[in-house]
Amino acid sequence: MAEEDDDPFAHTRMTLGEHLEELRKRIFRSVLVLAICFGIGWWQVEPIAGVLMGPWRLAVERINTELVEKAEKALAAHPETPRTEFFTSEDPAKAELKDRIDTRLTTFAVGDSFFFALNIAIYFALFVGSPFVLWQLWQFVAAGLYRHEKTLVSLYFPFSVLLFLAGVSFCFFLVVPVGLYFLATTISLDKIRPMLGLGQYFDFLSTMCLSMGLVFQLPIVMIFLSRIGIVDPRTYSKYRGHFLIAALFVAALLTPGPDWYSQVLMTIPMLVLYEVGALIARFSAKPRRHGGARPGATR
Image (tube, rainbow, N blue to C red):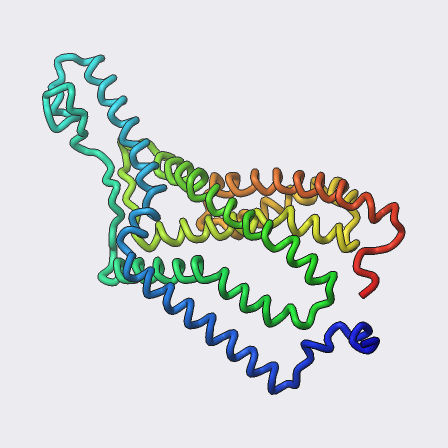
């Protein structure tokens, strides 16, 4: 009994062969679940695509609304101009523009539609199946962790998932629609008409959302580093200016294309999250600074 207390891994120790067999089982289960999720995603690709195109529709509807207002002002300033110059009907109740922006995305190659559907199914499988895959990974890794290490992971992991989902949602419902609108109206619509391809849109959407989900992990990383004693919380305040430069650099790397507007939309949340992480880290680290002993020093 004393030996078991001294050795926390007494019940989980396995031979190399047993470790490999356990890993094989975990991988097989994960691949099976991901394959099932992929099949569901491919089966429901139409409704999922409709949801994913939501940010583009919001941006286009905003543009068309402004075009209608602009046309109405032009008609009010020049009453002699026939309404059909701008609209499809002379009826004032019908405000359908003749040259409105299409909410549908465009294909530029034969396989664009197929690869768009394929990407949807793959990302759906990863998004829906990742909780099970992470659980399998945790079950394999946890056997080799000490009790305090398991406690830390169990404490931080749920918040990490919630922050990732919050970052993706924030980007999908706010950053991407606003970014698309701004990028499409940088030059007057009298001179250009925005047309976006399926591949271009999916690359922009996926890169922005995944990047923002990772950016939202910043407070968790900061708090964790302070809790385990690697970084003093006062360091965050000291290097605030340095972080601003780093945030601009990271945003430039993560955002697709050279547009500064998307970079600003990603940098601002990073700065806010940095301040939140620094504040929480300072308060959560107080007991350890005065306690004299680091958490987890005893196993």
